[in-house]
Image (cartoon, rainbow, N blue to C red; front, side, top):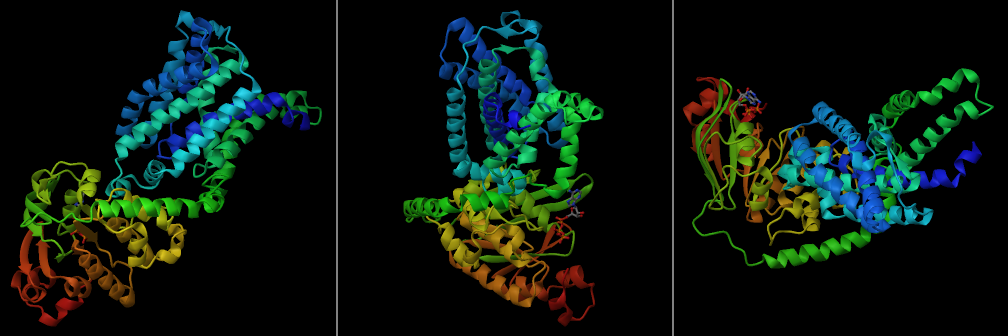
Length: 561
Ligand code: ATP
């Protein structure tokens, strides 16, 4: 066994596989489980080998040729992957893996099914240098703003879009970057083995590459390295099983059953370690020394951004947001019916209505999560009716969700920073926002360690950090006690004092009516009353909608979901 582990060739193979693992990690980080990585390994291997043999290219350009070829082939795959999720994505990528293998088996120029050889060998030093370069670049990418956007998609794609992340573009880029990195691994493999054939890139290889990340852990690049090492060593050990004297002959069959062994490993490991061997917490602990450095850089960047927009004023005589004739049907159910509604700068509007009145549907249509079927939405004078959610956020429209949606693997500080990355110039820095919501003491904590009230504050912080013109808060007080609700009311007023228009949807009328400058009442998708809290409380249509026609007046203030 020791012989196996001290084998130089094995260490080199681990380094080559570690590059593929990093590539796999970079795409799975956006929540896309690509089970067709053998295709990009093969494209990298064959392209690198071909430009080496036929054109005499040196190591680096030939590896780059493989990476570029893989990224180009990955583009249509990435676009297709964007349209599907879950099992369809897995099946689609598996099919691509097989398609490329079969196609290569028919190309005579690279030896078809017989295989291809004749390339110059790569030295061990060359492999380790390639791993070092790929690892450093991957670390920089993951630690960058773009990396933060990628990681947010892993946790919640809708919430990422609401935070201003161009989810489609980030996912497409991730598939292409991942393919390029996996292809570099393929290119090195070709120049290390010196003979490649289509059978080396079968579906089992795709599973193995996926396992590097699943077993090692996606939330830290260390996980990719650990996973690649473990699986490569395991493959080596399994292949040697029949030669090992101390392994009983009854177990020799394991040598040919390695996918079954890996399957068993996943079944045993995953329930105990759902994040893989290297968890997000471990990753956080490892990155702690760099946090102060990064904070200093980000703080300078955010102050510069604020100064750049210091003189920006909202256009005169323009509402923060105006909705005209918004109608939305779910099949036969009309959830919204010709809703006209506008909010002024720095105004707090309470949008209230019984269960099913259409409040969340309205926020979803305004935020772009649901397409606008009929009507128009104008934000700061611009028609945003058919814009994608992230474009609305970047133009000044922020929202929170009814079921609090924070990012499970982003720290409090990273979540607020994600919101800030979509900010219009001139707004508060992420530190200011953390202070505003009272979470600065929890900046390095993951949301799982926060109370529900703190998680709601975090979601609001993410929205406010984008320096919005208007923010829609969907039932922010659910699950809060009286003290927490009072704090929330203070926070809503503080947000208004920043010049932001706030729309609060809440069943707790003490909160909603207590903070509102104006109240809008929805009933069966239509606005039935608008005015001061006092006006709407005495409106007979509102009394009917909430309580039934002849209920006593005092009862209204006690209505809760
Ligand atoms: P609540 O206060 O309970 O959250 P709401 O005022 O937010 O209610 P919506 O969730 O917007 O109301 O629902 C408005 C109407 O649209 C309801 O009749 C609801 O059943 C319907 N509806 C909402 N979402 C869907 C959907 N995805 N498919 C079909 N019908 C839906």
